[in-house]
Each structure stands twice: as C-alpha cells, then as structure tokens.
Length: 260
Image (cartoon, rainbow, N blue to C red; front, side):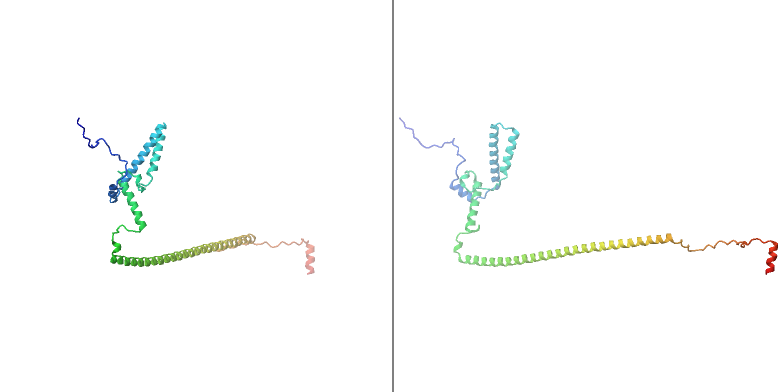
C-alpha cells in the first residue's frame, strides 16, 4: 500500500490579522520615517466616528428618541474632536502593527525626550568627543557665546532700567500736569466767584442809585427843558386898588379940607 508523502503547504485562505504587535524590522524602519500629521488626524477622526457609532447602537437598542440620539452623538463627536490630534502616547503596546505613522510619531517624541535628558543635539555625530581640536573650538565658541550673552544681558538690564526711569519721569510729569490743571481750575472757579460777587454788588448799587433818583425826582419840581425857552405869558394890567374908605357927605368933605 502506497504511503502518502506529507509536506507543508501554504494555507491560501488564511488572512493575517491586523491587530498584532509591530516587529523589530517595522520598528527599525519607523525610526527614519517622519510621521504624517494628516494621516494621524484621519485616524483620530476614524476612531471618533467608531465611538459615535457605538454610542448610536447603544441608544437605538434602548429605543431612545431619534432627536436625542443625534444630539448626544453630536455632543460626543465635538468632545472627542476637541482633543489635540498630536497627543500621542509613547506606550508601544497601544499601537497596532499597521499604525506606522503613530509609531513614528511616538518614537520621535521619545527620542526628543531622551535628547533633552542627555543634553544632546540633533546634529550630534559619533566620535566627536575624541576630537580634541573640535572640542577646543567648541569650548572657545561656548566662551564667546557666554560673553556675548553676558553683554546682551547687561545691555538689556540697562535698557530696562532706562525704560523704568523714563516711565517714572513720565508719570511724574503727568502728575505735575494734573496738579497744575486742578489748580488752574480752582483758580478759575475762585475768579468766577469773585466776579459774580462784584457784579452782584455793582448791580445792587446801581439799583439803589436809580431808586434814590426816582424818589428825589418825585419830590422836586420837574426840571426845565433845555433848548428854546418859551416867553412868559403877558401880564394883564392890574386895575387900581379900590378905595375902601367910606363915602363922605359934601359937608364932611369941606370940613376935611378946612382941617388941612
């Protein structure tokens, strides 16, 4: 009886799952890849819509009103989209194998933190620490940069002191102008009060004078009119005074003449 020969065969119906950890080769390839922010934002929007659909399914199962479902879904969407898209967690187990850009962004953030911790620069080259000439030039550059920064700091402090002095001087001048303005207003008010008092006194004097004149005119005869004088009216001849002596008889008249 012929025995069947067994050998491994490839399963063509097998689909590789996407939810798997990234391999070492993928991590190495992701180091030199710069993350695309548009793809990260697209992934974030996709996750937001998935969360909104899950909420919609839960509310539909509970037989909630359609308007209330739309309102709650929109509220959740706005709440999730308000979070920054670049807030990336550096824990690698939270990423899937196909999320290359998210892995690259997390790796870039991790390397930046390491550089900040060890005080290394992005243009660092291996072996520079053993080059004495290069280290001497860097030391001289650091000294020159430190002296320049010290000069700039002193100049900045001098400008700050000068600016503060000018500010104090301007404030003092402004206070002096305000004080003079207030004093001028007070003087003007005082002069106005004196002027009104003098005008009231002069008015009272003029009123008293006019009143006294009117009283004197009412007591004295009217004054003569200036100009052409009218002649006095002609005087009528006065008759001779009548003799008031009693009439005498002819005998008495002769007796009187004889006495003379």
